[in-house]
Length: 220
Image (cartoon, rainbow, N blue to C red; front, top):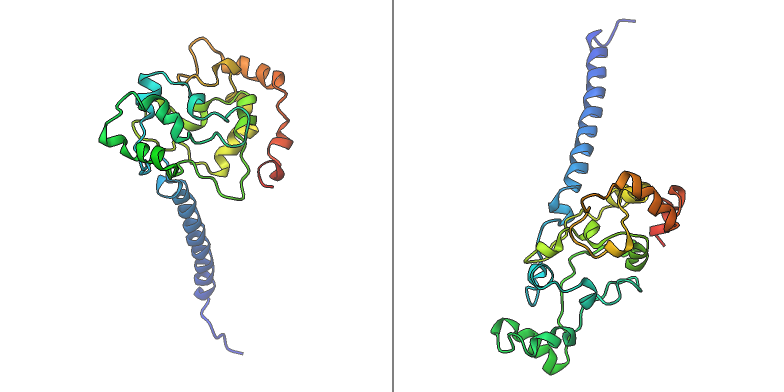
């Protein structure tokens, strides 16, 4: 029986198969990298708010503690959004007639809360509890960055699962003393994370890696 295909067809078929695999792998790699970009994660992108609240002014310049506004960060899953009353505690006296703050005064007069835009918005299938992280030595700036330097608020981390796992696999690299949780300038000079981190993990009774990376820890 005569040969239908030329011998070179075998080489062509092998090259075609390898090329398809390389192209598919390349596309997957590119998509993976795109998924990590701020375009997808929204990192470093300030959100428009009804009032452009400046953490730099309130925290960095005036030294207001995080817990003054985010009152449930140590006790509940949500850190809490400050009520209009919290704003008016100061702004009934300070800048009381500023047009810039009229949305706050209107909210106070009408009793209708301001509709803030979430900056750190995790998917609904992810369970995150602020209080457990605070109680285990994870500081504000570890996740939120130097928010005391932000004139507008943006997320500095991707909030993607690989970022969460980086800490859950090795919490000793991130935990700090509990009296430093709300300190923005961290790590402090003279603090040896490699030495003190493992001690804090043991002191805070942080679970082992198997538990910390279990699906049910974050997906419930």
